[in-house]
Length: 360
Image (cartoon, rainbow, N blue to C red):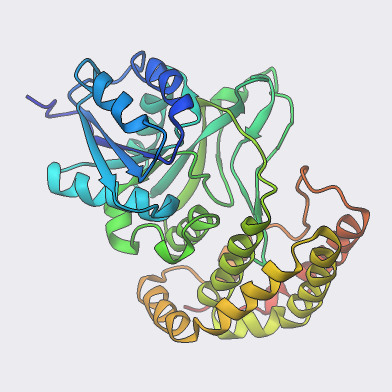
């Protein structure tokens, strides 16, 4: 029988041809310090062709947590895959939380317990991210909570920084947005604001969902007692830039009130011109143009999305801006022109952010 007093967690694992990571992940999950009758795993496969599903089926009968396998007929991306898992979980049992975990991770035994205890102690927390470290360099941070820029950019917080040696694990911090690589969502909050945005397919879904939760009045935090090790590789696939830029622009035009968009429009246009020049030099100019085309053909969707956002909004744009960054600064992209532009972006932000509406 399930533990009556312990919160129930649905753990969603989305897989796409990632069989080489699964053995290490499952080995670490077997050591997790969490009641075995209070967590169910939903393994969602996005039409893999590497035989990973067969491997999971063989291991499933001996796995310490109840395991359900969902086989999608096509690749539904990060957003669609996780949403299929959440939907299946809702039909299976009444859960308190949904945890998302990348399959290319290894978890500390207390990983889940720390997240649940943190969220359970504060009902205003809508999402809690783990402290994510590099698997091959466990003294370096992959992300301690992602940074949200006011123009919709997002990147890993404290990327490649060394772990502090004193009292760092005892700290809990509000963050820009929670990385979907290792995160716990309050299910009641998701049912209020909606699940991951499937139109995005991949990239920025976690950013967009955290922003929605913030607008609905929930806290977005990182628990630095919850440790996850990530076999991270920065993707330089050219098609990535189509998804990243399209989704960033869609987020920008759906989340802000019209007055805020107008306030940021001069620097937005200048930044877009700079990105066009950078994409031309970096080889993804066509993908950047495609992102504009996809935004233009999404006008009706943007209108519908803005109405949805308005219905859940409990926090003003001005309040949200207080948690955003003004300067662009991600360690994987080292370009003097970009770094220089960051100073101008920050200066503009400091001057005009107070013009954003403080009403709902």
